[in-house]
Length: 126
Image (tube, rainbow, N blue to C red; front, side, top):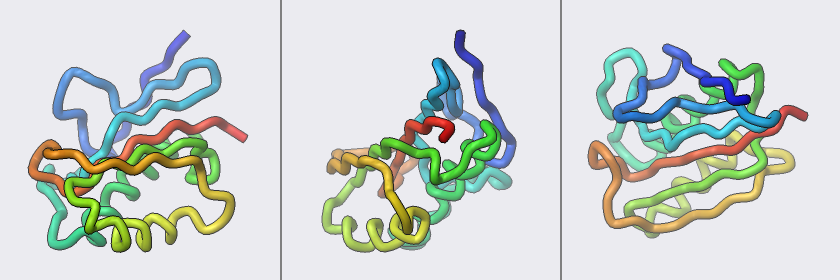
């Protein structure tokens, strides 16, 4: 059985998908970009600021499911330019200091709302 996870602390879905779905004890969080959940506008002054907002949005969804960053087992990162990898990775490391999850990072040609970075998580309650 699946349960839809939704919070106003993260941006609403901009398409026909859920912020996250809990199924079989696993939380599948849809890709998040740097939308401010209050204004609905992109927070994209630079890649570090954008990455931080993406991770805050993902954190809000984790909390809505009674989870935290320590419960993340897989992160998928989509970058519009792999030259942004080092700056994204530095901010990412602030959120995953100990025992980071598995991760895939790929360069993509385009992201919604002209975003530089998008991330999706899979989490399991420890």
